[in-house]
Amino acid sequence: MLCKIRGASRRGLTVTELVVVMVVIATLVLLATPRFLDHIDEPYLTRIISDIKILEDQLSAEIVDNETWYEGGIYTELSVLENAIANGI
Image 1 (cartoon, helix red, strand yellow):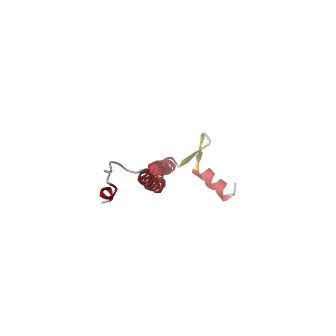
Image 2: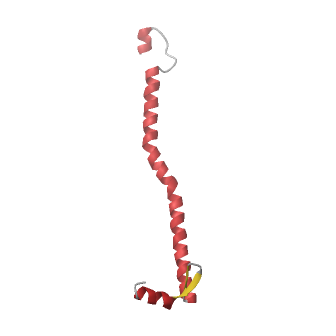
């Protein structure tokens, strides 16, 4: 309608329209980026937690199977550890 009034055909977007579109896109990117970055770290944290649980299970199995605890490069019998804990050492 406006083109008929001006008497010229319109073939593209004005600079103002392009700036508005760029501002809208930039705003959407700024809103989405923190959520995206949070999801990047999530698998690594899940893997670390899983590895810690596996290590905990393996240490518990070691204690039950051998009645020893590996500490500082030597195996310590559980009775020695229990006495040390009881005596506050």
